[in-house]
Image (cartoon, rainbow over all chains, first blue to last red; front, side, top):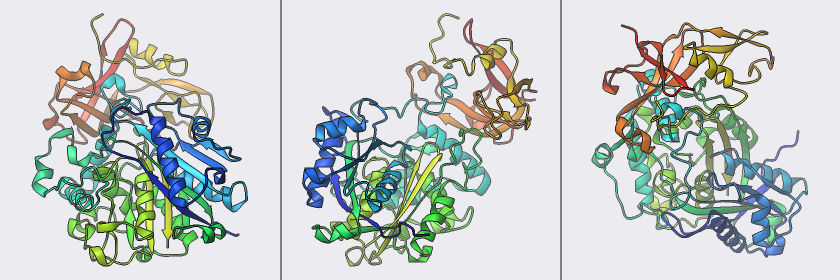
Length: 383
Length: 136
């Protein structure tokens, strides 16, 4: 069977101001990110003939058709697509299928939300349980993390390494909201506990911002200005189960099957991956995902995950923008767009390779995770 | 009882029966007539075999703590005076797991696998919440 390996490429990314950006609608972030992605790719508005939109959680009025309307695009491939935090990776996969089969030439994928200054859903009961005071995703993941402490002896000693390493990357990224704010191990331990066992620094930010990317066929990249970033492999696995019944809170999550499929399509092994951009809504999420991708065995995260190897200069670069924890929360778009920027060699002070004493990046693994580990998508991207 | 100001369960046509039993202080869940799977949350079909036939079996109300969290900040104004409070996932003896509160114990005293049993909290005239306490 012919696969989608190397058939599609990401040829444009678009950012917006991010962090605390009051006075803006969620729609405005979709539009600005889209405009910047089109400009980055060197395309004209009229070139865009596909649109996939991840609607903001706090504003269901932002539909795919509305984004198309305000962008002034007339497309022949359109949908809203929501797999929670796994959406960006899913959008990329649907877009790759569409362009590979001629249903569209250039598919624009957007997300945007004024979650910090506007309406936020992150304090509500998204999986039931409001009658017991079970509010916010942090608590749902903290339930998983506590169980992992019990089953394989992880905990703050491991999670602090992830938080500190990612902050070191953010301190090299002017776009990161935590750019000017270093973090020590002591800062981590001193952070207040919000939902035990999670401290503030185990928990990602809530951001106002938007982000977008554009996918086309490998053939069409020849006429475009940017170095294309090819999609070598892709996978999804969505366990979906209600979090209370879930058997995957301590792994294996969807990362396992999604990752195996993506690696198989790409025809590579884990050792061929030069860096990982892993969905990091919480520190523990990173630990369990990397475990399920197979980088270490069950419970071995505490030996594997050390800030020295995960941060700049390390042999296992992780979340090089600062990630959701220290750059900005843009759902799956944060890890995806960072991989593109790194593979294009445009990451400035945080650029993988000689500038940061790390391996030259040829292949980067991107993971997206959503719900309470109920959805998962994987992309393997290459130069 | 009219002064209860915390969020209540969202009762709809799919889960009303569950809450009616709770009002009678019975913890009942749907056991699939076809495959025997006891499901939670309440729903119109079995997620294992898709049979739509089920019996509302009465559970023992006993189980053990599967995991838990302690809220140190309030996410909702009606819980501000309850900080710190515990939300746990309970592994019921009959198989399903459910979220609830553990009453009568501080968070720092809780441990995974502690045995618990159900106790009902009549929070309004219409709603009784199944909560759990330690088995002495």
